[in-house]
Length: 442
Image 1 (cartoon, rainbow, N blue to C red):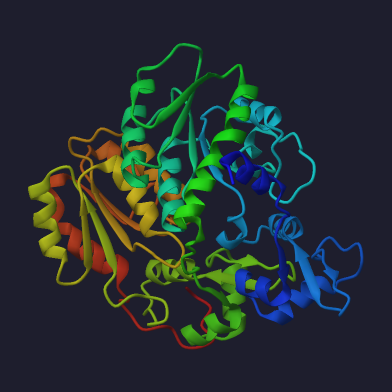
Image 2 (image 1 turned 180 degrees about the horizontal axis):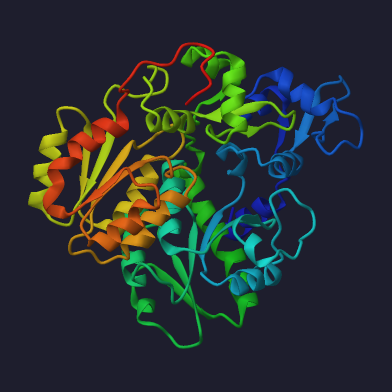
């Protein structure tokens, strides 16, 4: 069978259909929850679309599941996004993202018709029948996401960069992405104002387009990712699915922490404890959000939540300084050392995918080639890295004041690195016992 025939068959393949038990496993809920999602009154916006077999068994079409989860803001599991190639697009200007959504006829996953988004909504996950597309307005955040997608087993098949962008030099971004994904699979399209940029000569760049001709970009996207998907499926790359981050119900949190259920609900209502709700309005908690709450208030951390040896990444362009700091931290923590701050963003994403987590990052901005403010903001913006405790070294007092307002654990001049260990012990440990049951103060 020729490649053209294979691609044609892939295009014509029907979308997946799921059993109730399969969907329960994918969404990390029990079977009763799936039935509850289906059993609401006809016409209720909270109902999960379904059909039944001749034997009366529930079945769910792929698009219906995506519509349901997207409508309610429920995290979409990676297993539901394995059916199409993925494209990552970095475009700082909202007008360009809106224009691309229109030109490519993009829609939210599961939606049948496209909608014209407002500028502030032209971000995140979009789709066509041929591919998924992830829009980012910041190159640093996109690099974290690229690493996270790789760690989750769903690395992007193609990257689109709208030049110029700020915070990171484009050539450095391309080099970091190529190093993370591997030069044999990394491919990027550049969208520019018309002239051919120097970055076009970088390894992995397979096309340059004018931003006023987004229709041509769309046609290329419809061709390129399918070829990549065929190659990757032959290697089994897209079949890898990592473990999901544990999701806890309110009663489990109350038991782990020795509080009553009313206390947990009070913390959520007061905005102290982060949670999301199922379509049935039941509270759910991400493991890393629970861990972040306990560390923020120095509560004792149960073994079910916190690792015995927290993972810490040391990012310092100076190899001797990084080695010296790592030696100080190694007796207490699992330490990773990296020297390239741009590549470090992608590495942090890899370490934060799925059930994996990185507890802290110690970054030195001495002799840096990135915008420190944008670098730190990238970690705070990505949903899987914003719980990481960050210590920043370097800068002047004004810089450190701006960094601290982002929610850093600590910042200090580079020569005061001796404060790193005490700061980590305070930020990652459990300094005091949990409060008695019924205590509603964090």
